[in-house]
Length: 317
Image 1: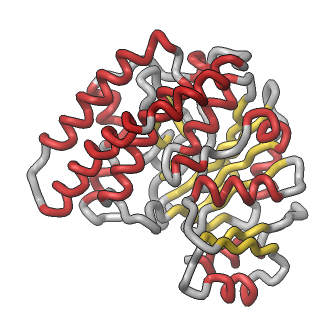
Image 2 (image 1 turned 135 degrees about the horizontal axis):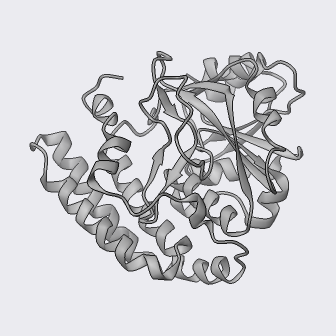
């Protein structure tokens, strides 16, 4: 996948770009692939895997451009991606983020058109599972971190991804912090890419479920308005138990369900760190992002948002 991703970066047109590759402690010869496929890239090699959040943040900090893109190695951008994303970077009030359009690997459905977020702290891939020409998906809360654009000014004000998250929900957390500081998010539907998804940890794997469950709770405690936290945490606990008990039990499935509960337990063990961050985040807030959030969800809303993922879980990507 890395080679294909690099080829796509090398084929960008219309925009002069600087490419930084963060090698996250790989042992599979990735550095040689970078030198062979994209020799003009700056390679930052880490001696261990520090997680997507910390590695991507390092790349964002080392960049020198006023707008900086994050691209995961399982995301393959079209030649005009950079140009289209930048075209949306100056639309709206105080733009600090741009969401792009990620398609599934067959280009048959949308994987994500940015992030949606509701008052319960539940994030989802906007328009996930819809046809590629579907555009009416409600407000864009922030970009999906697999293929996103961030302004240097916003990053200087808010910071980058929270490295403690390791992976998953770090893009939701960053978008929420940016919204609290009054930064807006544009949407570039012409900036298209193909996204494999969960290529590193595995789709619906125990590791993925653990990280998502833990990091969602941490994000709520860091960013959510205090009045909304009790209801959000009650719903999160109920959904976690329902996820663990509702479907037929299979060995892999059971492991993922138990991992989701374990992730929530891990979140509570580390919540004191997030409460310390919360004081700083809430103390410097300039805006109420709830105008960009969907209402508290119904069961029907949850089914519409996540029902298309059943195809992936059954192995039908």
